[in-house]
Length: 286
Length: 161
Figure 1 (cartoon, chains in turn orange, purple):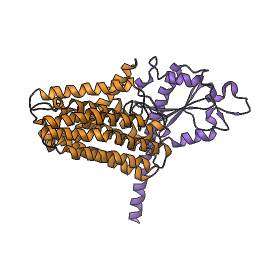
Figure 2 (cartoon, rainbow over the protein chains, first blue to last red; figure 1 turned 135 degrees about the vertical axis):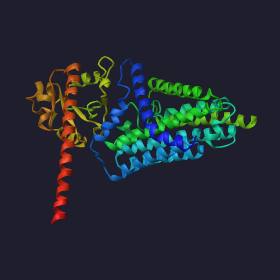
Figure 3 (cartoon, rainbow over the protein chains, first blue to last red; figure 1 turned 90 degrees about the vertical axis):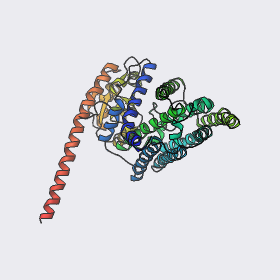
Figure 4 (cartoon, chains in turn brown, red; figure 1 turned 180 degrees about the horizontal axis):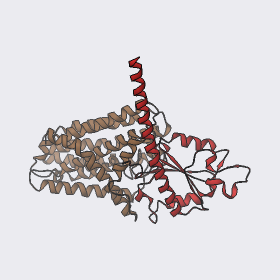
């Protein structure tokens, strides 16, 4: 992976992300016994949002939303050019913080609640994401993603516990039930649209596009769990990505939203037990 | 090609409704009618919405609320009055607390009469509203183009002077 794949990411990630979002809505609808919108509906939504008036509280919020978009793209560029996975994690957290600042800058109570819940979400998933990077380092001896692609065996075989933990926090990152506290994917009412309550028109479109970039990046994380230097690796890895994605949609439709304390407790419990034990055993074996 | 017809987001406000029309509006989201096929999302947030669905009539307490909701929606926007109470006050029109239909407070684009309005009629109303939305969108674009043209001419005139 190199600069060329990074440029491919910048151009094609929103296209693919939008398609993924469309499939998400169709699969959710079919699971609920409905027909659902056309698959290209997210594109229609985003293009429509660009034609709407941008009714802002202040100009700071749009500025920080643009920073959120830019840093999400920047994070994806680092990831897809085979860079340092630690840098990817830190840049992703920084992008999330920009969204939180944007929500706080509106001084609206609903945005403030959404921003606080987003911070609780970041607190919940950071340990496991960090342990994932540590796990990759223990197995592959480096933080560079290009090295992960040349591994002898799929890293998943060394750290199934870390994979379980990562799929768990992916529910938080994809903004799906039961952990969709700050801005839910499917619930559109006031507090639950929390962090994006005060955005309208183009700003909301930028948030949506950033989520598409982020979703492709997260599926990239799943990909590197199943990457090794064999020609079967892409097929296995992409199948894993699809299976995980459909699994997340399934979880979304089955569970109801929980309170933030339970989300924090569950993810930290998982981090402290299964994920940490996996890493500890790896240090003993390797 | 405007996409506003393909993705009309809706906010639903209940005035003095008996909740009959509200239930019919929410029924449109259920698998039997599935209004999401048309791209409709029921957002609870006026800043995200294109169409304001109002059920129930207006009384002294919700005049200000309706006004606020309408003002917070970004352009282009349409209002659909659902049920006969939102259209004209219905059987409560002569009550001392009811001011009448929604058009006393905000400009209404589509009226969907009925008591309670049927989901098929509501969906029909929303489709009519999307066509009006598209017209408003085209008007907005033409107006902004005309304004840009005018400001260009003004600048050119100033330079010549």
